[in-house]
Length: 511
Image 1: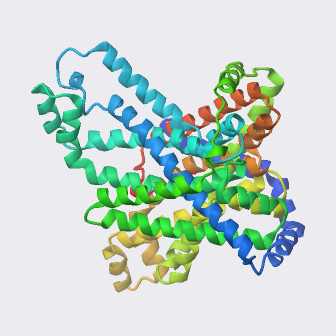
Image 2 (image 1 turned 120 degrees about the vertical axis):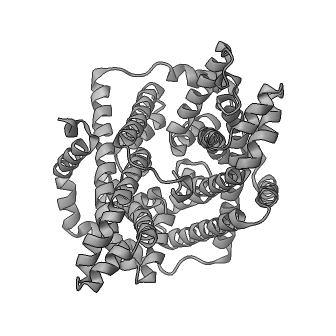
Image 3 (image 1 turned 180 degrees about the vertical axis):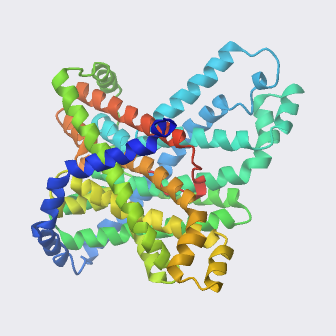
């Protein structure tokens, strides 16, 4: 009976139901008409548009995305560091033995809960909400990154500080030092390098996120890309995608350089200072307006969710579509990544393909696939599958290379073929880690599936986009609560599986 309490059998059953439920969409995909539409669009997309005026527009949009990411991360640091300090047990006298202060304990619990709430909604959902408050432009993206990433930074900073040696900080606290002194002299010397490394990683993720949020009118490369897709201007789309890939590649290289430099703190401050100078010069500050009067009305309408049975039935349908997209895409990606990872050990061009697939966010894949297969969950499933295959294949290859090769070599010396030596000598060593990566990506895909509806790929995201477009904030509040419930349920299932989760340095960006 215990095996039925484990989530995996129920997840597999839900995958089978999802395949049956989406059968019509897959049959339509096999007819060929959709792929002819995509082929015509791709044929019209070459050569890319490279005239001087459009290249200048692309450069301006790229610099705007860089400015948004930098200012958003700065806001996240201003919000996240206080949350991390308030919620940290590493700087709490209550953990050392004396009678705990109830007010301090309540404040720590509240700060942790608020950080969880802020990071549970994807950045694009925050951007959708802020666009309704501040209008079109980069301010919505800056606020969305600041709010969402503050929760992420608070959580990870907390974990890093509590995983270090706590004795110096506790000795300082017991000696009468303030929490700030205990932080500066007792905690930071041991964990400074890891804190800086994760901050650089978050900046890299913010650059990717700043592009994605342009799809809801938050400026930057994403907004130009969304406009070009609406006009079916394939040449412009290719140019903007190349600019995006170049920006991501530069961000990856800069991130790797900062992690391995001798003085990462000074180098990070220098890079952030340069990017901030670009932001101050690049952004049109006349567009950064925010209505405090509208904020009160906005919050008031959100505090009255729509609980009518017909709408709850609609929400249930969107929730089921979102879960189906995440499960099917994760299953397909794992099945594709396994043979590709084995081939990539001896074929380096496949690794370039993996990097390309994981560099392009799911939302961009979805916006292209909607042209081919039409509106609905099938486009979302394929988009998630393409991106996740690149992520999982890269992780699978690294796991294969890090595994002990002695059992496989011993079987080969005994006369076993390549397939048998891999299946019996290497696969048992990596299968558990592969399953852990797949389950983790399933959790990430569930978050990503909630935003793909912005471009028409179905699920809760599409319902939320329609509700906000119609100014039905009561319905939007219900949908946001459903998204929060879904995200928290995914985290609970992930904890129930009791499999090792990837380290932060191995995770791809959460968009």
